[in-house]
Length: 243
Image (cartoon, rainbow, N blue to C red; front, top):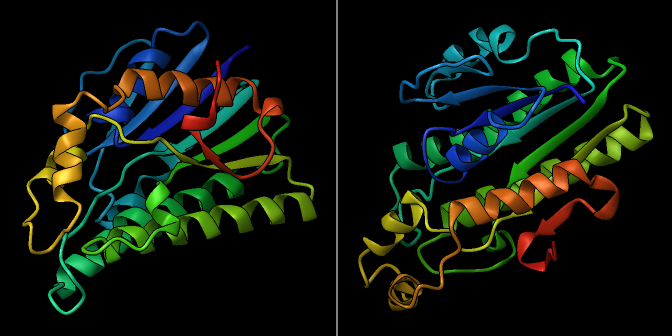
């Protein structure tokens, strides 16, 4: 099966693990998007841009979503930011704008273009948005992050409803990857204790080796992409997966 996999945030963490696994998968072409420059290869093409810069993103849409004769095309909206870990009243205007742009607006623009480009294509089509269990939790200091992931979940649910209603044949998932050992976890552990009462708990995840590896999380997400018929419902948590 020939497939095209498009991954945002591919330079580190979960996105890099997905990229590295997919470029070793036969008959798979990967398009990766990240701020950092990456070396291209026979099965990997890189689009270097910052998702916070929306004009650059919109300009790159043709490069991100090529016309291709494949059996499956998948968009993985992986890029995300924890934002300012601080209570409401201490947040900055720039920080609020930045996290909603990266975590919500950029994925929405990419989903919008994905539908425009591939809705009529006779191919299997999936969109996987990397969400978080924080989407339905109230965590002090995480107002920005939790609300953006909640918005991403609703965006994904609505997109699936529209796909079914309009018979577009696109399958959508919002996937919570669990607590993964990524640079975002490093940022969380640097929070000020007065702004984040769960700081000690999150430091304990690292100290007690309770974090899953990006490679482990990537394997489970790839299983979902390979076997969507096994997964019922838009909102998924990989901690519930049994491979």
